Image (tube, rainbow, N blue to C red; front, side, top):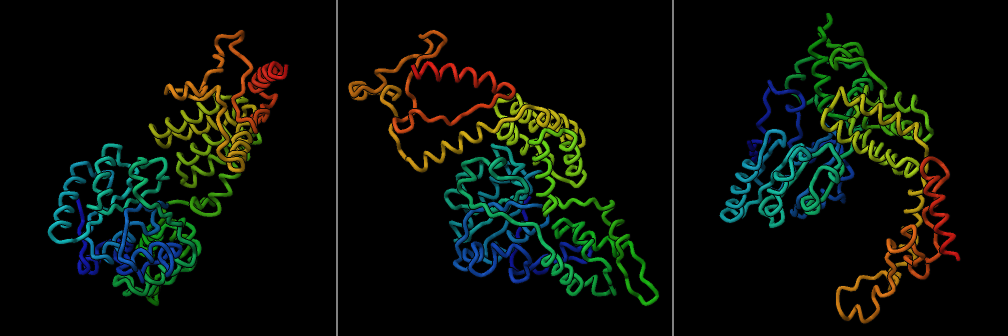
Length: 441
């Protein structure tokens, strides 16, 4: 299940029959294009490699931005044995075999081992657990690659042992460099006279994905017959044919991604279900990950609806679970149902404002003491000091309420949560007002 790449193998593994993206895969860090914020002089990965000290890390970014290539180049640079697993096909047994080999490398050869796991977010908890000890004691250096937010998909103990590096979509300049490099250096393309009429369109359809860019270029060349002068002229039509679809103006990793998700969020907040569903359709048609949309709706349910309709959070969370189970195309229905409900629900940002104000007080007034009456008293000494002695058990009083101070003295009259008079928050507001009046007597 593993691939080993020595320096020589890394240079000679290319085959004319391999896809273009593989044939021109960078062989050195100097050939690597993009991710300047990580590998340029003075940047984190460059400094790490210059010192010859590498730690376990996770590359988080969209497809085709150089995660696998960078992992291989790092292993080659530090002369580590390189193993690659794909999380979809690999299991705990494969991981343990590599760990066993890594232990021998370390004890007998004093040689490091890098285990690269592509799509690490697809490893289940047991598979991720199997890595923990070996990562912690340095038997292996783990490099994981994921298109999903590691905070959601990688278990906390493993995530805490890895540095997360965010890889960005490739912009016009690096994509242009990759095209030029392919035309000048690939042994297959060098034999052809190639003219690309609309480079920008080719780059736009790639969505910042170098692999998609090169595959699209190669397919466009295959679909185009040379003219009388022997030139292969790549037109917009041939590019569309190569990508097997008409272009929808939605770059899921660029500006359109942020503009359209912003439009969706504001449509829900503005109580327009029709606009919300339209923007979902735009995102799905452009290839957006439905789980990304669902995550945003979970945030929306608390930030913009809150207790005006507390069921909104339950529905949004269920939406995420449902689309994770069923996937596309059926997930579109669940997303539309949830978006329609959230947009149609009464709105409140009272909880959002409350926690931000409370956090501000915590930062500005740190370590305020807990009132004695509500402190825990697990020891005799604490009991003697009066911890918890004047606590009043709310359920022993009429209406299950008794006036009691729960905030520190400096904040005892502070109101953080101020419910609106919309939806179910109206009932909450009336109830809190009744209790507040009792406190003021």
